[in-house]
Image (tube, rainbow, N blue to C red; front, side, top):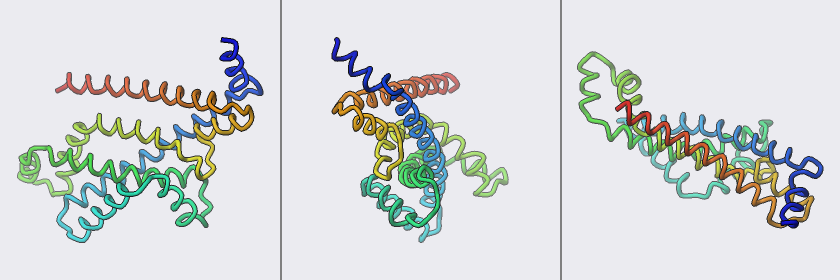
Length: 223
């Protein structure tokens, strides 16, 4: 018990090291929100491209999804930061947001595409018979219904994205995991800082999961 209290003191209280974890958590959450927004926009475009009738756009979208899903996220992050955007003046958090957003977009596109394909084809036919163009039918009729159906899956993707941002330290971004590594370097405690990081992630994801479950119950009740 004494050793536990000492570990907590040296890794959290002394020199106000808890502030390092709080700042890291803030960066991780900010990065996740930015990346999720980018990912949804990219995913929507890719899904519509793959469902459209333009052959070269379908092939390009399929190739993009295959490449992103077939390569490790950490490799994509490093390549985008050092090779693609290496000479840009963008802040690290924006570069990381773009990298994670590009990755998330590939997975979101498949969710949206599956949600659209799961809808009854009569929805599109009914919209077109009322005089809606294809674009307006997708915008006002099909996509809103598809998003409602895949909202729980999108919520899970947000949680996965939050945990994936733990590799942002590869580009020296002070996220939550790197905060634990910084504290470890100061206290020479090999495991306590990372246990604290794991507990923080667990706490945040538990809250998000509870909110997601509550949303699902409300959606079922409305149906």
